[in-house]
Length: 239
Image 1: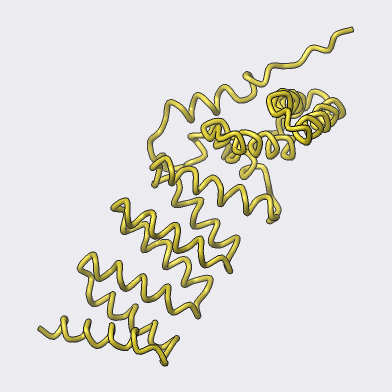
Image 2: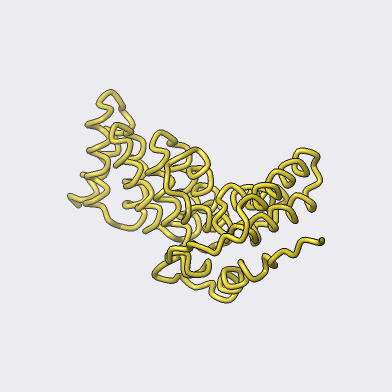
């Protein structure tokens, strides 16, 4: 007897259509991915079948037969819409194939369903934030970026990449948010204070820039560079 699978299009149609049609900065970003802020609990058609399709997808992926892997992962998700491992692997496959518009709603769904802090969750949040930044969806990416900093607090390089991207795109307020978040999780990093001050100075907020530079000096009193920034900013404010 031939098995009949529920089409994955029915499972993801709402999320994909919402993602395509609504590119605005919604107050709740998950609305863009099909209402994933609402708990999704079923129906699970056949968990055993889902696991079988998932394993077959992994086999095809290991053989670099990615289109066949995609089909098996889609079948697994059809059988169990909350199968997070299948959602993750399908998202990763799309990402590897640079099919980012297909990967993004799946990454968002994986993040929404994943409750434990794991390496997979950290990678998904970081990747989705990066993809949204690349697409210029800054009102969406900022929330993922801030969460990525919280989840991976020792990764200072991602803070600089995020902040520079926002600032270069004319989104100085978001760059300031990023450096402020970096300072919260890495309070001893004087360079974050220096860069925060630089953007504040760029925006004409000299009083706040001075405070940031003074904070950098307090954290790294041996730095002549930071001391000179404090002196020059004080002189500008006294004019």
